[in-house]
Image (cartoon, rainbow, N blue to C red):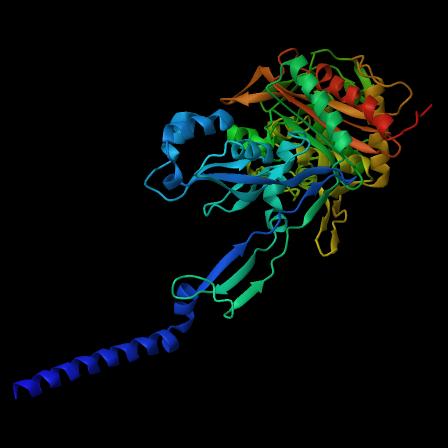
Amino acid sequence: MHKHNRLFLLSLFFSVLLCLIIVRLFYIQILAADTFFSNNYLHTVRITPDRGSIYDRNNEPLVINRTDYLAFASPKDIKDKDIYIKKIDSILKIGEATLSSRIDMEKVWVPIQAGITEDKKRELASLNLRGIGFEKGQARFYPESSLAAQLLGFVGKDNEGDPTGYFGLEGYYSRDLSGLPGLFKSELDVIGKPIFVGVQDMINGENGRDLKLNLDKVVQRIAKSKLELGMGKYGAREGCIIIADPHTLEIIALTCLPDFDPDEYYKFSQENFTNPTISALYEPGSIFKPLIMAAALNESVITPDEKFNESGAVHEGGYTIKTWDDTYEGVITLTRALEKSSNVAMVHVGKKLGNEKLLTYLSKFGIGENTNIDLQGEISGFLKPKSQWYSIDYATATFGQGITITPIQMIRAFSALINGGYIMEPHVVGEIDSKNGEKKHIAPKIVRRIFSEKTSFQIRSMLQKTVEHAEAKWDRPKGYAIGGKTGTAQIPLAGHYDSSKTIASFIGFAPTDNPKFVALVIYKEPKSSPWGSETAAPTFFEMVKELLVYYNIEPAN
């Protein structure tokens, strides 16, 4: 009986064990087959695609890829940690204490430094150290260094450690540039080795698309070199230059200082990454006057030769508005008023235009709306509602104070003055090219028309005379028809304007009959002089001398 009980219990045990095995196998193979086999017997490797390159309009490379390496240590193969660290630091120069903290002798594998160049890798390999290895990778390379840093942006890491674009084009077009990763699936045996007769599945990825810009590297270099000279000469805290084709609003050059080195972006603060031309608001000052003058011309409430009596300061809403130098010429034409940048005359023009139409045109100019430029970080600003406008607001808006605008909004609105009246959508990229040969051309886009051809002709003529009859004697190229306007806007601080801190600017174009380019130069808080006529304008004309030669523009006479 006792023997029979033992056999029964043993049989029961094996029966229960067999049932558990059957239930487990049923669960693994039927109920949870996808999850179990995917997690335990299928090994998936993600194949990172090549990131797309960026070229200028003449196919000159601005951003390409280069091979780099991750240097790693295998602590179990290191015999003398101190000697190992000294030898590696003699090449990498990252500090022995830093290396010591990274190399944890209890671990099997530890990273030492990423982004190592081929030359550094060769130097490290020549040490013949046991316990050092390299993983091949890919990094962005900027052949022109920081020539267009804020426009291009940079590539960093996301929260999962994957490369991703930040700021500028790298951020805006990150999805196009990144491409689609591929996958390789391999079935493993119970000890984790590939089963070569098992599942071997390759899902092909797609390398990133290339960007061909409207930007011209030669023009970009001209703009940046003149900006660097101007920043040093005038002691400005910040400076920017935008050059565009006014007919299409293709961005030919865009540079701001201070900027950063995209190869070593991690050494700079976020302030250096932000592009002021799209991400900073400012009061434009007198470069805004041609827009209001053109609006009044367009509504046929004034003419260029209409007379105005500039007899003295005017009073509006309890405030006194004077000319910039508090001098008055008496009866003058409105063309002369624009030449001498008369605030008093602009208040008169604004009254003839009327408050309702003034607000309508401010909206048409694009104040308070995105331009939709293809760069990451654009802000739209704000155009306050009619209910918040007072008489002094309408008056100061006519000469570009009390309203805020981004530089890209300013050059877009100004381009409408000289291109026949069209507000265009600005674009940095002209073409997106896939590796399979497919090309996507980004055509110029008209947003709306705000001026007639007649108005555009009139204001171009007035702006040419503004340059020719300017009180400042600029060193401008002889025999060329150039139009433009200076601007000096005081910076509002704590509810009032600080006369010692200004934004000095000049916006101009050439030739006046059929403009090839429009350029905006801005200096923030120049120390040598607060006036745009003495800082931004000279920079513009120094730049234009080279642009006229580069574009092979013939003299007008």
